[in-house]
Image (cartoon, rainbow, N blue to C red; front, side, top):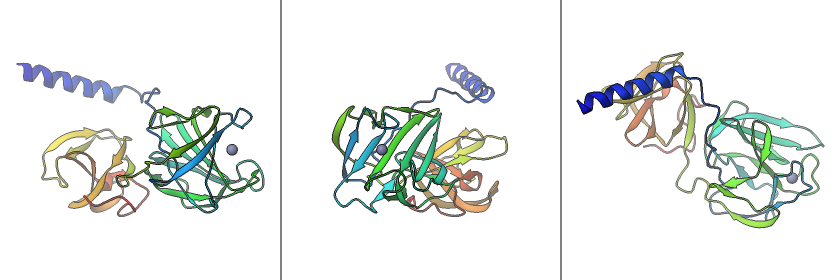
Amino acid sequence: MRRRWWSLLAAALLTAGTLLPASPAMAAPTFKVPFPCGQSWSGQTRSDHSPAYAIDFNRTDDLGDPVVASAPGTVDRVTDLGGTSYGRYVRIDHGGGYTTYYAHLNGFNVSVGQTVGYGKVIGWVGSTGGSTGPHLHYEQRVNGNDIQVRFNGSLALYWGTKTYSSDNACSGTTGSGTVNTAGANLTVRSGPGTGYAAVGSVADGTRVTIYCQTSGTTVTGTYGTSSIWDRIGTGRYIADAYVYTGHDSWIPNVPRC
Ligand SMILES: [Zn+2]
């Protein structure tokens, strides 16, 4: 009886979740320092900065050093403003209204529409635009408004200069993708194949973190035929043929399970 009641409740919740529109009040992503794991960078905030809550990062001989995504997301701007403002900059959309900006880059390593995970190199430190020396200008925004930067949930120093150590992708790189089934829920399996038990489902349009990829049953889905399966949690796999990852095959830098 208890079991049945629980099943009915779960079904009701699933139905409600299907009918409700996407929640506008998503929790903030866990942002990481936008440099490779283990590096230390001096980050400066100042009240006359534009926008005010941006951080300028420096370290010795930093021209050309790699800049990495501070959280999983989709690149939605790769823009060169020439000799003004941000110069060459990248914006990443993290969902829920959250975006991050990486400005004055020397060059780009991503393109618009590309899905990125923690630690993905998106470009290199430069001095383009309205910059007088190499540095990374970094911002976090919600719905377009700049917010005070947080790394791992901890507020950056306002105002002043502080050393920030990166733990970005220290335990390996994850990828991310968006489920695209043209409407139906996608079945989550306990292993990489259709013969494994169904352990849940994800709705069309769900953004997933991909911890690793492996080969399994060949599936024909929205993005063609593939035997790649994505592990999106412990004992949770979905067919990559239904996931937009920005890559036709294996996602670079995401480990094999
Ligand atoms: Zn700046």
